[in-house]
Image 1 (cartoon, protein in one colour):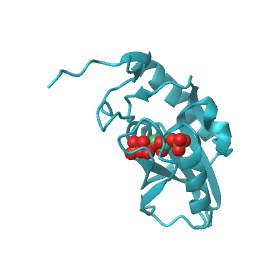
Image 2 (spheres, helix red, strand yellow; image 1 turned 45 degrees about the vertical axis):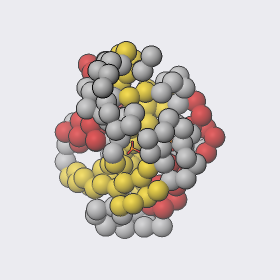
Image 3 (cartoon, helix red, strand yellow; image 1 turned 120 degrees about the vertical axis):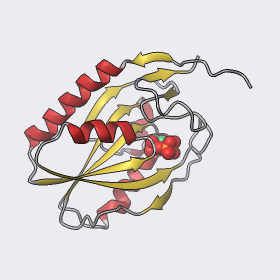
Length: 173
Ligand code: PRP
């Protein structure tokens, strides 16, 4: 088996942690009484964990699973939601936490599905956003970095389930 090559760094871990701290301040500035962070598995794992630790007050964590890419680098065009939110959301201030908005399809589907649960407020934080996100008009309220349309891995993002563990966002050359 060929050894894995390390992806080229696109956004380093310090840059990520600085930006996550800024997003946390933006969330605090907008205000909340009690907040549910709804992490979307699997890609959001690190962003969720870092953001949660930067937020004060009454914060709870819920999880959901959505996937459309499988092992491919292209979206299948179908979003499979295979895990319901692990906390009741009715009447709650909910912040969807996503690693990336690529075409925006996943976020659009999630927002539609979650609106039915009648949260008091439903917002989204995404670490990364690509230009195609406009296609499905999925709104994100907090965005870490606008990036070029390149395939990125690391900090939760995978290629065939590899690279999620990396502390930075990188590109496979
Ligand atoms: C990735 C990512 C987003 C979605 C973005 O999930 O975590 O949820 O794709 O793409 P879109 O905007 O084109 O819908 P993926 O299906 O790869 O599952 P994963 O998070 O388990 O890796």
